Length: 340
Image (cartoon, rainbow, N blue to C red; front, side):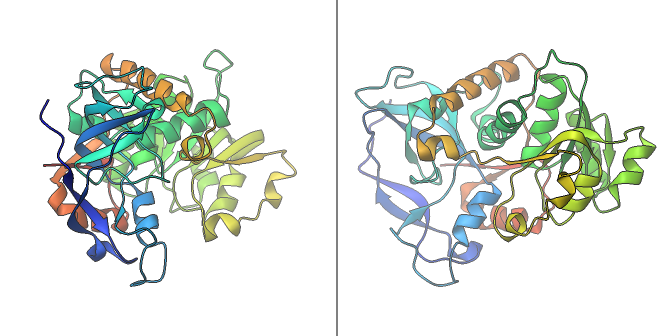
């Protein structure tokens, strides 16, 4: 292992704003706390939460605690460990989603609690692995912790809204190949529909059109579960295709979530839940569960049950390009950036 430098390159922001506020800077290399790994980052991925944090205040106003380092998806090599670390050692290849309260992965090094880190899948490159952690944890927690799906229970159905996106494309795989559900996904473009089917969706409907007639045409009176990974502007339509005693899980926050009219759920005893991947590490609620999930998913990736959702690879020098593409809302799968 090469020596750990005192300074490192990182992508930072000093003020709130669009992609143009992201720039490179030389900052101190973090040190590992008692349960931390210091990871030499080799690849990162971008997620909508990166944009939300980047845009988190009036444009041009200073970001508290500058320079701010975004990024909560990454893969790399353990460079050093804290004195209480037991699961990893220097030289191990790992992948992780991180903790939103700590500096992120848009850097050459990141310090991260070992309990929320998984071993990198052996069959994947570091780039391919970096595409997976945040979206996989989000999907897994929604399916098995929020919905409490039992793969051995009677056959059940799920509608996954946004089945070609970062979270949706891995949720389709897990729902079909691990949970054993009948999966219908939504997509609004032909190329998105094709990708959702490739990931395992048995059928695809258009979330830009009325959902109920499309579901009935496929033979579904409704769905037992609905996992919405996209805008909630069509929430009443989601309720219209939810089976009695069904369960909806959403990952969208902000004004979209605060304005929801849930009255349609009452007559059918429907349940509405929220999934936020950062809850466990941020609040210290059994954070080791996330490391366990990532290790389980690594096994599924190594055995070919699941596949990476990486669709595009760029240099991290193109971070503004990646943010602009993500903001356009037409990305399929995940954009990954190499860290040099």
